[in-house]
Each structure stands twice: as C-alpha cells, then as structure tokens.
Length: 311
Ligand code: NAP
Image (cartoon, rainbow, N blue to C red; front, side, top):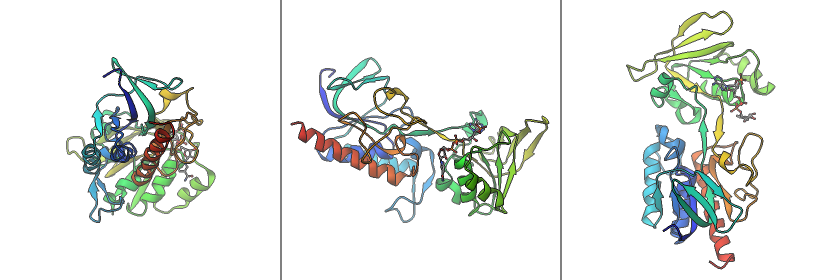
C-alpha cells in the first residue's frame, strides 16, 4: 500500500474537500480524503443551514456533510481518519506523512479549512451549538427577539454585531482592550447603531447555562477595575478571528501574512499539481457554497493536470 502512487489526495473533509472528492471520484481518480482534526469541518459544528441552495427547509450542517460524504463514497472516494504530520512537495510524487505511513500522490488538494478562534473556556466549549457560535450568518437567525453578546475588536466582530442586529433586540460588543483593530468605517458603523452597546476592557470569564444546556448569561470582568458582573444574554458570538490550517505548508507554498494559502486563478498554488480550496485560501467569503465551488474547481484542475501529464 505504501508503494502505491495515488492520483490525488484531498486534505480535509469539510464542504470544500468533500465537493472535490465528489468530482474527483466521479472522474474515477479514487481520491483519498484525509479527514483531519475536525472531520466535517465547520459545518459539522453548526445546526440548521438555511442558505445552501437546494434545501428549501434548510438542512442540519452535520447531515449536509454526511450526505456529501456518502455521495463521494458512492463514486469510489476513500476516507481515512488522521491528519497530515508533514508534507514534502519538493519531489514528485509528493510525499505525505500520516501517522507511521507515507502516502505518495501525483496531485494534492488542500482543503484543510480554517478553525474559528475560541476563547478556550470550558463553559464556552460545552455550549457550542447551544447558544455559543462563531458564525453569525449561520446561527444569527436563532436569536430573533433575544439579547446577545459578541466578543472581539476587529472587523469580524463589527460585521457580526451589525449583522446580528437584524435578529437580536440588543447586541453587547465586548472587547478586551479599549483600542480596536477594526477599520474606522466598520467601527463607526457599529458604534452608531442604536441596538449595539460597547463594553471595552471587558473579558468573559465564564459562559453561564452549562447545566441548562443553553446560554443564560456571561460572567464578565472589567480588566481595569477588576469588578465582576453577570450579563444576561441568550447567545454569545465569537468574532475573534479564524486560523487557517496551512502552517504545515509554510516554506513550500505561498502563504499570506495571516497564514492563508495564496492562490491564483482561484485554486492554483505556486506548486504545480497542488491546489487549495475553501476557507484555507478564502478569507473573504467563507461560505459553505463558495467552499464547495472552489472544491469543484480544484478537482477539475487535478483532472486536467493528470491528463496533461499522461496519467
Ligand atoms: P482580527 O483583526 O485579528 O481581530 C481579532 C480581534 O479579536 C481583536 O480585536 C483581538 O483583540 C480579539 N481577540 C483575539 N483573541 C482574543 C481572545 N482570546 N479574547 C478576546 N479577544 C480576542 O481578526 P478579524 O476581525 O477576524 O479580521 C481578520 C481580517 O479579515 C482583518 O484583516 C479584517 O480587516 C478582515 N475582515 C474584513 C471584513 C470586512 O472588511 N468586511 C470583515 C471581516 C474581516 P486585540 O485587538 O486585543 O488583539
């Protein structure tokens, strides 16, 4: 098995990776999908997905992922648990180290996604999907008529807070400092909004509601005065950034200053035969449907590359 050269290996089993797998499998390339640290990607931690075309009533994120997985398996995609420990893209075939095994492949599709940055509190982790979310466009709708909080001081937090005013009656924006990374325009827009209240120099110490399995409030601490208090909210959104899962390719393909893979023509990296799709190369749209779109493009490019190289 170790001596077999694969036509293509797909890193990541979120929306981008699985769409690439459907296309590559239908092209008879027998793709191997390495499921990675967070099998199913970000969709697997959301609840109802209402903006993926074709599901008029919406579909649960984990179900959507499961459907894609089965769809690709039907055409011959293989799945393997585990993640990439190291990759050598300087030789052909490429060598991928996974556990004790080295996998050789002619092409590689990097769909390793981006992971939301979390505060890291145990109570926060326990309530993800039960009032704690890192995706306003995914989950904002569930907070219609409720009061919620957003954490962060960058553009993502401002964007989330503004978006969430469509649903929530009040949005409290909590930032750990009193200076903001957000662009002036976004900050001013959020500050001017009548439903958004700012609280600076404030950190979340605990998310309340673990026993009830639903967020009931936040224990906050003022970092200047040290005063603690409880803010009653039904939801907590994290807008503290995403971390693209591309660090293992540093030095082999180009990454931008925040670690996203730089691509040209949507999915091309600087190494021929290596393509990137989905959130690992997309800091702008970060939607399931756009990830699926670039996953499709990556698989089509793999097919073209293999054909051009006589495989
Ligand atoms: P960001 O600019 O890095 O901001 C992250 C924010 O989260 C910072 O305010 C940071 O606080 C805070 N933070 C990080 N870790 C924290 C923690 N553990 N606890 C509490 N707060 C924490 O990230 P971003 O807002 O996601 O933006 C990333 C990039 O995408 C930026 O270049 C941004 O301009 C761009 N973007 C643009 C738009 C738009 O133009 N519409 C929308 C979204 C994102 P500190 O400031 O104290 O470090």
